[in-house]
Picture 1 (cartoon, helix red, strand yellow):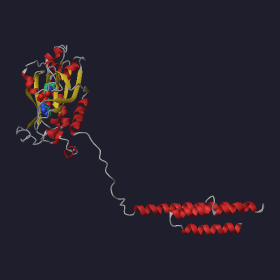
Picture 2 (cartoon, protein in one colour; picture 1 turned 90 degrees about the horizontal axis):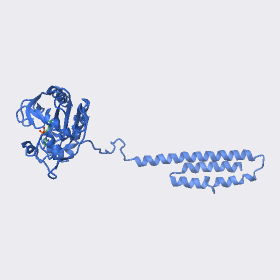
Picture 3 (cartoon, helix red, strand yellow; picture 1 turned 135 degrees about the horizontal axis):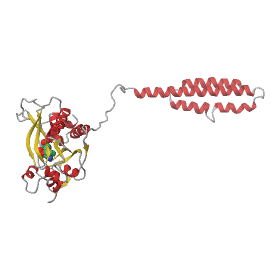
Picture 4 (cartoon, helix red, strand yellow; picture 1 turned 90 degrees about the vertical axis):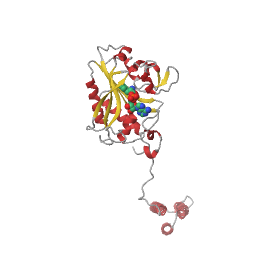
Length: 336
Ligand code: FA5
């Protein structure tokens, strides 16, 4: 039986070396190592071996089976790697992978986040209010009674006699002040709507309202806060000027201009050759607004400002037509 085992081992080794593919390997496994294979057939004869020789022959048989199984596994691995190499032929593994496109924030949202971040850094809390507003908060609480000429400037979308799409974020001044007592330091970002459309105006745009109410607040505080904002948003060397203006809810009122970021004051089409660009409206809160929310205007004073986000985004990125922000052209939007 020993000779038979050794003969089978030699035969199987030669057969394994001649295997060229996986189906040949499977045939080998069935023929030599399978339950009904040649090796099992020889092992069945072990019972006929004498008692003295059986342990030695059994050990030899086990060793031969182990060797054949390990040679079989090695041949299987070699064939697998050969198959992979064949499949990879013609593939350039140095080519870059497929690009998976991913979205990012709209440029107006990016500027909105940056503006809010600056005021939050100065200690302002963020509040949000409704886009669909009442005539009372949008106008009357802000000292703009019916038939006041200032209403004409707002080109309002009315829902009905008393309800409208807010034309500015200033209603948030009244909404917050009637609920809370000073000291207050709040910004209110959001969408606003006006029936208006040209290269510097869209029917929907974004504003950030800011207001601060406390004792002994003066115009110098307003100047300080807005100067810090301009320095952080643009450049610390950007010139800033306060130009007298009028809003029914602030007194005195001002519009704030910065030196033109396109021509740096030399004069160009964007700044209409003045060297200056308006970025926001502001002023000290009118005592009439305080009376409507029950604050004593002898005790408290405050300032408020409202800036247009699209305007800031246009200046920051040097864009001369506001409508580009809302045409959803990815060639434009992916640049930011
Ligand atoms: C106001 O809306 C006042 N509520 C601002 C204010 C707040 C003054 C607090 C005093 C105290 P005004 O109408 O000027 O002001 O608008 C403010 C900014 O909104 C403008 O400077 C401009 O940047 C932007 N803006 C106005 N209309 C449009 C529009 N149709 N499209 C895009 N931006 C606009």
